[in-house]
Length: 355
Image 1: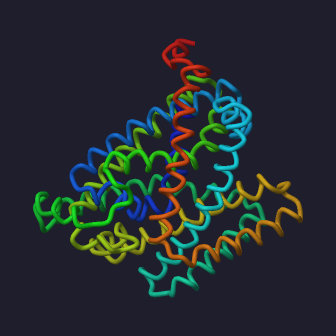
Image 2: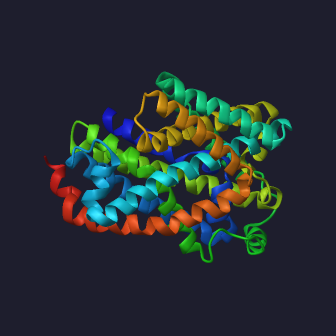
């Protein structure tokens, strides 16, 4: 059980980055569709449970050392190479979004211009990657449970203090500009681009698990927790859509309304999650192209960090609305491969449950 919970926590920690924790992703992909978007969050939750189970289980069965082991088993040599490159460059894209998110957070909460905020986050992230301070990342990752509890509490407060009926909120949602043309497509895209980021971690964590059963249950627990959090946060954001629709960090706004101290706490938690995610994605991208731990790796990481900072100047809201849906469409290839590969390579998990 302990091993399963560890995998579940890692799964949640990877997905819950700046876009999720701030509520911006959820607004675009679920809340802007109104009540239908809540159904979309249930669809996404179901897919997260299945994909978490399948990827962690296959990682365990293949004793994966990197995501390439699982990707090539799923997609074959040629398509697998394309998907591997897609995952690699998505890591860089996520780094760009995280740096922009850090700037947006510091601007909304403390009035620091986004340009300087993003520059500061970039320096911190590059320093940690170059120094390879793994203990720091472990400590930052420990705030994930606190983020989950705080976000859930803030969302429930939003529901309890809503000023409009759900009929009025649904009408307001219809006037927004969502991240997809249909609520079901939004739900599928959300899972698709997030699972692209989750594959490397689920494959490696599954490969390191003591048994396939523990890996599978870890994927299931992680997917279920993500689904519950998505539903609660989406409901809270929909309840306060009239006041948070255009904000880059809507959950932070609601938390500050509850209490300035709670707003400060949530800002700190989101900031740590941004750093955690950005360090992980920049390190993964650099390590895929350069030998880790070398002088070349450190110089390359600094250069990639500077490029990511330049990309972050586009702005957090714009990046979330453009980068994630693009990789979401590409990620449909990966989801299709996972479904086919799970049936072919992984087999039905029930068959291995008795092992």
